Length: 188
Image 1 (tube, rainbow, N blue to C red):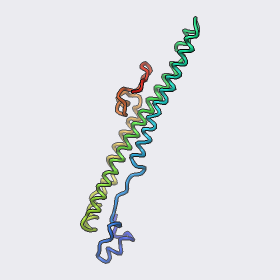
Image 2 (spheres, rainbow, N blue to C red):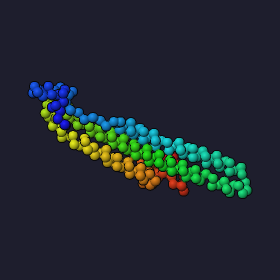
Image 3 (tube, helix red, strand yellow):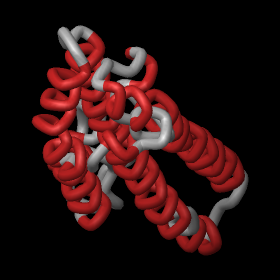
Image 4 (cartoon, rainbow, N blue to C red):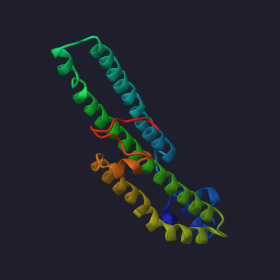
């Protein structure tokens, strides 16, 4: 990027003087910011608690109903909530893993934006426009590659693809693995 042809900078360069620092190159932050992305991830992961409440309520109501039934119908009622509970557990796991993956990506965006802040500070502290341009050109390839964001994207996609793996759910912000059909979820 040749900023010497930037219409705002060109007159200064033509005169052989430094443009004002406000016209020196700066790297842009990634938008939306990491905090906003992480907040969406936390909101999604928080849905798991609501799913658990509905699940527990259904089991409690069903247990009360079963206590009022005797004989042959009572045996058939015993397994009535198993399918609903299993599906709720799977949905709950998906919410936790997706929320965790989004939150982790948001954290990577925040880290990237901190790098941008550091580069921009170096540029603004440069002795002159030529030094500022040298700093800008030095960091431009890293900015364009955005390795930290690509790595975070790859990790998030891997987590989403493996949402049903206990190790994945543990790394997405849970101390315990998410529920499996044989083990009910209990919030920490």
